[in-house]
Structure formats: structure tokens, C-alpha cells
Length: 199
Image 1 (cartoon, one colour):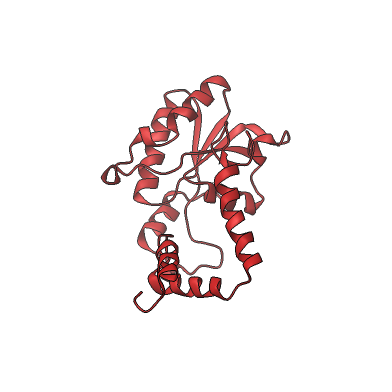
Image 2: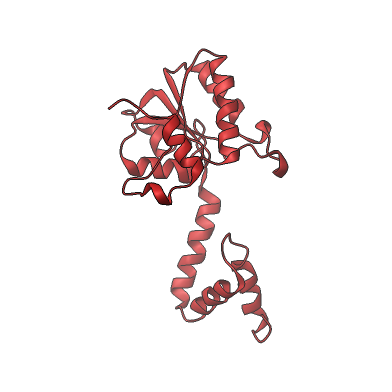
């Protein structure tokens, strides 16, 4: 960063704090800001402040929301007998984009990872159990990521929910549409065989 004036160095440092942004990308972003009108920069700064001031967690599912409830929980047409549990709001958005799910959600805000200090207490598992106690549901779909933390979280949730006599299902894992078996990793192929279905 040497060679840049101090305010630019500070801006580069701030941009490089973002996930996936290295020093070179941060420098490109800082240079972009330099060549942007003051009005556009002001709009950008206001949008950042708006997110920090206005966005909170939905009081029901812990999705991101501007008010007390997120759009999904506020929608009376959603099937509340079906809860899909996801790790992060990004996963919820991806499932919504598929257009194939009409139930509601519960966002854990992470997955079990003891080495990173993330245990059940750091996730929204207690809130899920309280939610089920208050409003029993027919099925809980566990849609955590197909990773070691995601699978560990899915196993814990399955155990806890089955103790409460709730039907628990796991999202199917397998080869993506248009995929080629010879390029698919071993774990995915093993899951394809394990979760095969009748045709």
C-alpha cells in the first residue's frame, strides 16, 4: 500500500476486511471510489448505514428483516406446518429463488464447528425447539450444507427433533442437473447411491 496517500491507504484497509477481498481488489475498489462522483459515494455510504440501522433478525425465523417479521414469515399464504432449517440467510434466498418451496424457514446462523468455538449454544437451535413447542409442525427439512459442519449439525438436529416426535427429512444430495459423473467427487457419488429413489 505504500505510495498511496493516507486516506486511500485507510480505504484500502477497510475494503480488504471484506471476505474474499485481497489487497489488490481493495486497491481497485478504492480507485473506483476516487473516480466516482461525490453524489454516488454519498448514496453508497447511505446504503451501508441503512443496512446497519434498519436490518435486524426476524423475530420468528431469524432471517434478515427490515421490520419485526421477514417477508416469508409475514406472508399468510406460506405453509407453517413445514419448516426448512438453513445455516445462513443466503441459503434461504437460494431456496426461495428455486420457487419450489412454500413452507417457512428457520435460520441457524452457522453450523457446528467445535474447533472454531461454534457449539449448539452459538446457533439458533434452542429457538427452533421453542418454536416447535409453541406451534407443532408436520415436518422439519434440514437443509444444512453438505460439509462436515453441515452434516454434524444435521445429525444433531435430527436427534433432537426425533426426540420430540417430529418428522425430520434431509435435503437430497447428488449430481447437479447437467453434471457429469466422471467429474463428480466421491462423497457426492456416495450420497447419490445412498439417497437413490424409485423411478
